[in-house]
Length: 525
Image 1 (cartoon, rainbow, N blue to C red):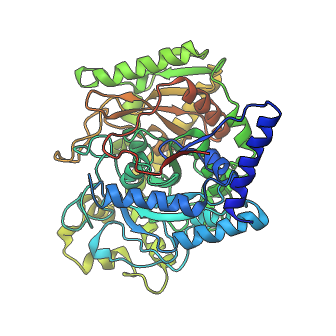
Image 2 (image 1 turned 30 degrees about the horizontal axis):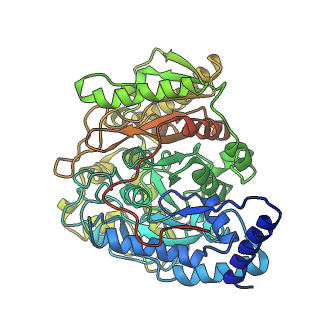
Image 3 (image 1 turned 135 degrees about the horizontal axis):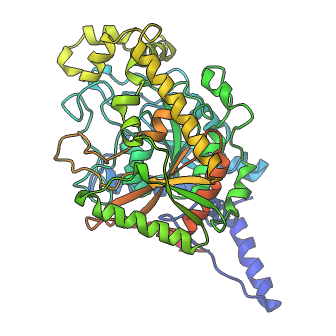
């Protein structure tokens, strides 16, 4: 049965509807705004195929990543993506869909291993080794029928910013190419903003799913630590690292989360997620969710003040008004009595540097016989020490986690803050907490990489809390401001339902003007 034949069935249904005086409503497919559900509708009607969808995205990558504004979001295109799409189109006709992700293109961050594609850490001395096995999240995506379209850029994982050791320099923000899209999942952020793919996978230690989602006008999520395996992902630190979905709608990131969530013997942290894993059964609840009647607490202790924050604060306050008008109960302020801004900084609460060398050496061992170095120590000894960041050198000098009082204190702080958030949600009977991810717009490319106070926050990242970013609005420089929703550990479904309702009430996402639609990306059927 061909797609042309399927399309003719759709036409025939319109003819039959006309003879019975039932109006036939034409549907519109638009690549710039399409959701996973809309992709499936167009394919079911015979107006689209996964092969055609992949070609449309590849056309955009060629037009805007390699030419035009040259966003530099993509490291490697998957040469097998089209063949995979064709095979999945045939399978769909014969057997039906494997899952809601069947035939859907996915971009993954460079740090996520894909068999047959290099993992580089964006650090030239590491080389371009090809892993023997997929990361667990990639294995799950492929098993569900997803298509790995490309690997996206990241910041320099071992070196100093975008210096000579980086492969191609900074990725540009699709909304304003003079600015960054946020690190270190900067590639997935810019790629999704410019709609190079339907969904993407980023990774997060101190905010690297949440930062580019906020700065690129996206929906992005890190689920509770333990919901998603990190096996096969180049790490920073075992306590904080997470992989998470990035997209343009809550429904899409929920679909991708349901695909990648689950128990994995290679990542012992996933044992904690037992009984809480996301599933496709969640999707109907999320789709029908409303914000009306939800109790949302404004965590004012995470909100910065001052002239630099004026535009961002205005966007945040408008978001609160929009949610209240839509029927949410806004509880403002919610106060814990702690200096959350300070306690959530990486300086105070980050554990990654203590774990980094051990986690990265374990990753290298997983990489297989063709790994470029046996250990991180060997990589540093084999190259000029100045090529490596201060953070890498610091990690080599820190006391072993087993005996470090400071490391143990940071773990205790993490447990305390998780408890504080849980107690706050329960004591105030809240469905979620809300605050701006940042009230400062993304940094310019031509400035140093040090973030100003309030430029980001690591409350959710340092403490393994579930967090969702939604676009709240845009500054006068046409740059997105992201709004963050968090909840207590393993209240991920509740958080998704709040975000799905909020998405309907908040300011609508704008398209970046630097990467306009191309011919054939929108059509009626």
